[in-house]
Length: 275
Ligand SMILES: [Zn+2]
Image (cartoon, rainbow, N blue to C red):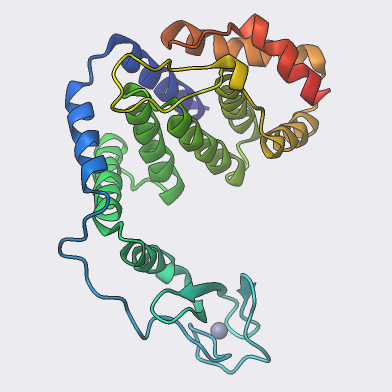
């Protein structure tokens, strides 16, 4: 329960910081992120040999009946085998769980985003160290990921990229859903829909000439709506309970951000899609 509260508090704190505009250092850091995103200084070359191209378990090296075409447990050692494409030669490979991150790095190199990838790794390392210092235990990968996403979303929002920020908040909701923290995931989707109803823009670099939000361009994503419907069923909410949660989640967001549409005005639009 404590950690659940913490997550909600972190989100609110992020928005509060945006509102107060006190994270100047953060802004400077993120501007560097952006400028460097296309450079590749010091990037290693692509790995030609990563992964297994033949139907052989990458853990126990036992021959498999056929090469798995999606995530699958090895029938011999019971470890999970993952399927990926190798950027070096587009070969379909199977990998171990501990190679997932290596593959992310491979794709970052292939897409010319190695520097950005390294910066995100450093961010996660810093968050992991901080959480370990605070609690004395090593945090889970998902926990580190969630906090890294929250930091990133706040950076985007701080520089006026509300559309990019919204995409990151969607990832935060997915992170919570994957961990079966349905209540918090639902609240995060409320956040995403509220931003969507306001019609978020990306205004980075255009100073004050362009609005942060254009409500007449607003779109509610069908994929998000369908995930919310599932969560409403899981949480066993009726229309009134859903409304209450939505208003509770989005009121501090509306107060702390330049969103032009209020929670009360946003709710009927969401309700129409959900019920
Ligand atoms: Zn095996």
